[in-house]
Length: 105
Image 1 (cartoon, helix red, strand yellow):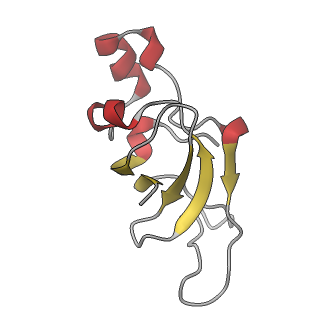
Image 2 (cartoon, one colour):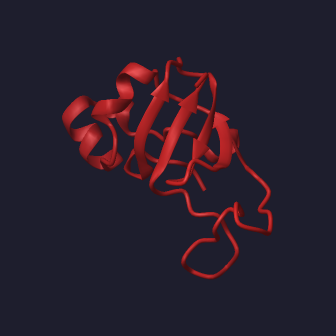
């Protein structure tokens, strides 16, 4: 499972393509870490958009993941009040939607 621009709601901090970033849920909990494929300055124009639309408007270079699944590590779920919520499908997987990309904050 890769993180696409459509699943990103906010970007915090400064980073360059290839940097390791934290991916947090709406409550600020780190749900994954990965190597980002875009610079922080590129991200605001991509937030919440489909890769198909981005490729059509900005060129084929924008039809790629924000974080490819090969460069993504999901953090282990914990029990208790700060547990990472599973996906709505009930299969125990962490959903990668509505995430914030953080680096050096």
